[in-house]
Structure formats: C-alpha cells, structure tokens
Length: 142
Image (cartoon, rainbow, N blue to C red):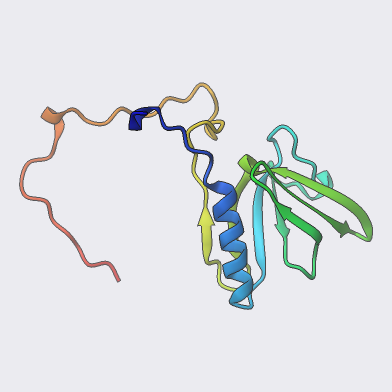
C-alpha cells in the first residue's frame, strides 16, 4: 500500500483524552468549548452563548464521562436538572485548564467539517516567484 492511500482516523479523541488526563493529573479543572451548532450536539441550550457552550468535565461535575472515538458523553446537573450530554467530537473546539488556561484549541482535520463553512476556500500557498528575497531569519520571542 502506498503512503498516499493511508487514511488516518481523527486525532481529536486521543488528544481530548490525553489533555483531560494531563489537566486532572496537575490538579486542575478540565473545561471544553463546544460548537453547539454541530448536528447531534445535545447540551442545555439555555447555557449556549454565541453558538458555543463551555462545560466543566471534571469528575466532581459530571458522572460517567466517556470519551469515545466519535463522541464525548456524560450526565450532569444544570440548575439542579439532570441531563445526559452528548457531543460529537468534531464539535469540541478546545480543552483547557480553568486555573491557568493551558490546553489545546483544535483546528480542522481532514474528513471533518470545515469550521469556516462550506463556501470558504483555503488560500493557496504563494508560488515560487512570490517568495520574499533574502536569507531567512529567526527571532527569540520571550
């Protein structure tokens, strides 16, 4: 099989599981940012703002958290009302620690819906005649 025919599964479920574990191991609180407009998302709509919802997924806030390869799901109480939450992993936009903001923001992956919408096109890379002249330089950023 040639390398160009190899199709990889999404890395997002693996990264969400890893970052969740890392955040918990560092005694921090994992939060996820969810695009509530993605088909299949089941979250409390009264807490959605600007098409997004931020959810605390720490063991003290949710019950039965399962991060599968296709979706993240758990049960939680919102305003005292129990709810089963279901989030397709393509809807998870970020995972981060509440205490310090460390985590990861997810971009688009091959095979995932384009977050900019179907009408947006990627900007083509510059052709060789548009490259800047001179030597490349590096800067130290502190």
